[in-house]
Figure 1 (cartoon, rainbow, N blue to C red):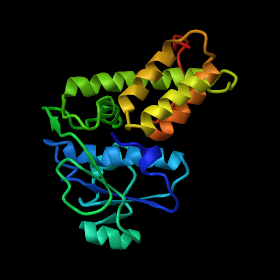
Figure 2 (tube, rainbow, N blue to C red; figure 1 turned 90 degrees about the vertical axis):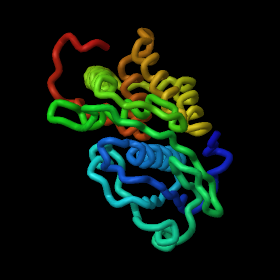
Figure 3 (cartoon, one colour; figure 1 turned 180 degrees about the vertical axis):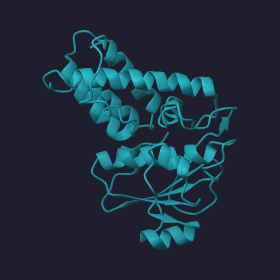
Figure 4 (cartoon, rainbow, N blue to C red; figure 1 turned 60 degrees about the horizontal axis):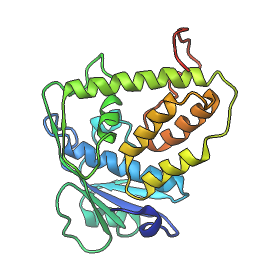
Length: 241
C-alpha cells in the first residue's frame, strides 16, 4: 500500500509519470482513471507542501480537462518526460506492470465503460470523477451510465448542502474527522474512505453547518469535485443543513 508519509517525504519537487493509454477512448476509461489517480496523488502531496511536476505518456485529453484533472507539465516517452521535468520521476502510475528502473510504481485498476457513460448536455462533467473516486484505485471497476448519474445526484446534493452551510458562521473543522480523512489519503490514497467520512459528516446533527462547510471545502482541495460551486447562488428553502 502506498504511504505518502513514508515513501514520498522529502525536499524539492516530486516528479510523477502517468503511463496512460488514450484518455479520450469512450469505450475504455482506464487511461482517464490513471490520470485521475495521478491528479489526486499530486493534490495530496501538495497539501503537505510538496511541489509536484507531472508527465503523461499520452497526449492532452479533453476528457481529462472535463474531469477536473490539471494539465501535465510534460508529454512523451518516460525519457523525454524525465528530461523535461529536470529529473527522473519518483512515482510511476500505470494500469500495467511497470518495467522501468527507479522510483515507486502504483498500479491502477482498469475501468471498463458501459454504454452511455460519455458526457452529455444533462450530465455533470465531474460525476464520473466522483464515481471513480468512490472505488479503490487498484481494483478494476465497471462504469455504467446509471452509476455515473447516481454520482451526479449525490454531487448535486452535496453542492446544495455546502451552499446552505456557507450561510452559517464559520466554525473550526472537527479535528478528529480531518485527521482520519488525511490518514486515509496519505496511507493508501483511500478516496472511498474519505467520501464515506464526508457522507457521515453530512448526516451528523451536532456539528455546526459552518464546520461542515470548512471540512468539505478543505478536503475538496484533494477530491476536486467543486463542492463550493453553488456558494453565493440562490438556493431553495428546502435545502437541508
